[in-house]
Length: 324
Image 1 (tube, one colour):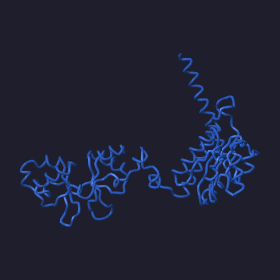
Image 2 (cartoon, rainbow, N blue to C red):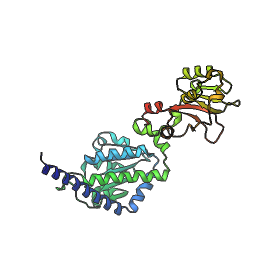
Image 3 (spheres, rainbow, N blue to C red):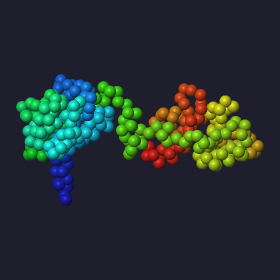
Image 4 (cartoon, rainbow, N blue to C red):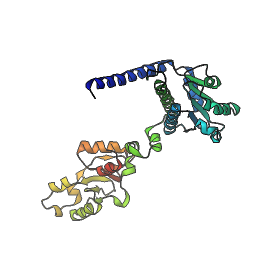
């Protein structure tokens, strides 16, 4: 492997990306009322969006279906060949079918197209030829602009699949924005993995109830130390007479009060008005706050109301959940 080979490889990679980037620009400029009609058709559907395609278009169709489903639009992929052998039963009144085919003449799509026409199931077609069978039969035709495949031979689906994938993303985001899809909605569909961790709330990770390390203002420091040790958070919250979080005792407070420590009360030693966080805040915000303050735990209290201790979250909880 020589430096010349590396230059050739880099040149090929950059050429491909440049060709596909230019095609995406053409696609954006080509969007018209048909795109808006597709969004309206999906919004008005009582059922699901059925996305289908053969070969490379099938792979793109699976990704589009997954993106729609995870962003608030019920959708699933149906393989066109399997549809001809029983899976047409997955298509029902109220659904919308979205079919992908660069040529628009993929023979395996024929049975699905016929089924949608027979049972009046709305059909969105995506292809590069306006006069193709798919787009002529479709209720809404989304035409991919003419652009060369990045392979240089015009044979390997590259530019066309990139444009189709981007078109699917554009539909999904347009639908999201219309439905005012929020991170909280997104979290419901992504409870696992890094995304789920990033969207976790403090309430998902915090410890509450009997786990809370809490003492009263008049509690002796001997008793407070026992609670701190038993609960295992390295801190103890101090409650006022009315049961609100008035302060917190940390290792630093203990060191500052070593002289005659056991003769003091929790109210004498505590740091008043500690930093807190709301249970409904994202755990990421808790991590950022703990990092900025150089602390390892936060009490959770209801925002804007009485400082009632609802829970405690630690940096270790966040680490275990994959938030950091």
